[in-house]
Length: 385
Image 1: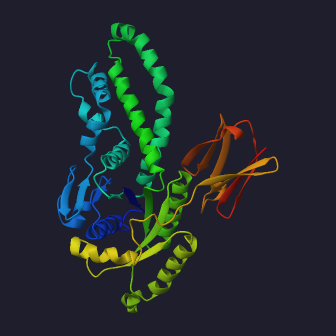
Image 2: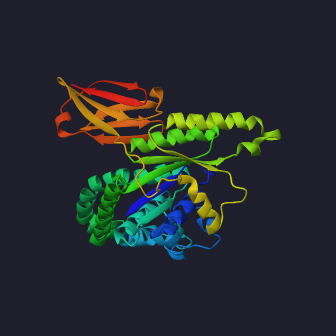
Image 3: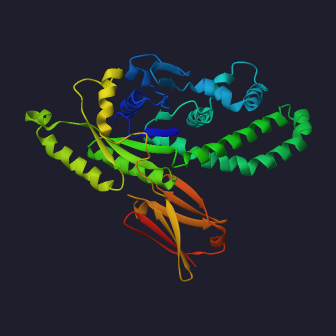
């Protein structure tokens, strides 16, 4: 099974490209499911139908769904949800809307990831197409497995033991509930699910991310930042899709100045992303809605099969030169002044603006110190001695 996620700045046409790709693959005989993780769903609008949290067949070989956050929330938390509700209402005298508070801020993205894992493990399709939320939300979604899984794995055993010892005393004196073992069991299942999810998302034979952009300078700049951050978390970006490319004949007269600007934008994209395929989709005369129009848009790939892994690159390699080890990390478009590097507890922590990634060092580097680090043409080179 293949999983292909489409991301990019809001308004670039991720939903249309995702839908067009799904229609193309379904028409070629692949069993396809397409889902949206964007809370402002528009996937159903692309097909001209109403979608919900349950998959439904919308064409031969093609199913679709839009994530229902409340429903996924209930399924994800199990007994922990009941405990939090009891905790929130234990000292309240009415008036608290516990159900609304239980949709924890930021976890909608995590629930969406769990749906991806569920579909993959059920193994009923050849391809899962994911129409992601705009760039910022997608980046948060993709780093949840590493960040949240690490917190749970370190804190859970200690919390379970402390709760068991303190439970009778706290219940008697403080009159508030303490978690029972079934709550911790749910957390352990959650941790296991996160580990499976992270393994899946980093499997470059299965999961690809494709960034949708347009030829405008502002959008290209965000595309580069998006690409760098996805590299930082070792996700495989295997294509760039340039949407809303105007035919030259449409830019005559009043829009004549856009001819030069658009060519500059397209050249910058092709030059910046030379290592991966770049596809272009011209602006259509009508909205990309309904299956017949989406089928035409799916021709943007030309002779390339969109189900294939179109490019692959590892985030880092480690080489040894004499007694010096060098970790070479690919961070295209990263700016040195916006970066920070820290080594502690057998890890290196790389900060890039508001994004942060911890890389666990192999055993043979854990007793060595960083001697120096430098950026060279989008590559971070760290020397250990």
